[in-house]
Length: 275
Image (cartoon, rainbow, N blue to C red; front, side, top):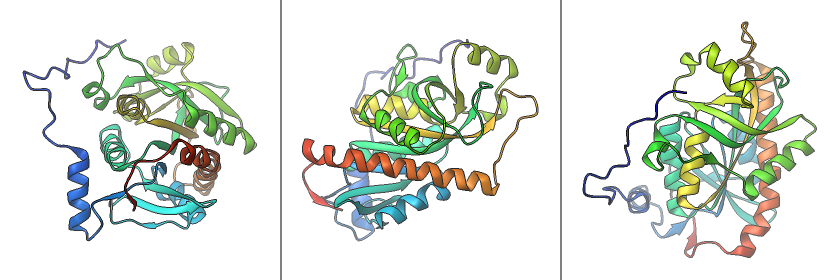
């Protein structure tokens, strides 16, 4: 294992963040002509690329919101729901997660992709992460190196159930998150696979740590886009099969959101006008 990163959490005598995400987002909403007092729906779906997001927008008949440039708002089964394009990479995806949480998101369901580390996981199958190895930088601004990245709440359970109901193989367990996809060493792939790690991506560990820090429920369902554990690196990026798998993953997220929306309404949502 690499040595832990420097202690970036050290406040140097002043632990108050300079930028407040809610104040910043509400100022931006007002500048776009939106209602700065509006609230984001409590349940938000997301995808990292348009083929993952578009089926969510269609299912909810969602329209762009002036509350946030990345947010769309619609309805599923009579309940308000959000949908957002999640930026690729830990740092940018965490920024968006922070902003959506500040505006009212309490359950976030994300469709993504993952490279398989184990031979028994095939292209188009699903990985639902329950924990992640932290080899990105963003999470270390929220939790020290020894803190695990994990997600084990209702969002994960709903996504796992929806993925199984879709008829595809589903694998629950740890993934490895890295900022450097072109530095995924073969020895590390073998070592992590032997330790039970299922796949590798660029966002999961950071999103998990931030969600736990902000006390919101986060779940991801990841379609297998490539097989990293094979020297010939089978992958389907840019193909019709990959686009179809992305759409299928989006429908899994929509299915899970339908299950969680009634529960979200029963437990209550933040006060304020809907966006």
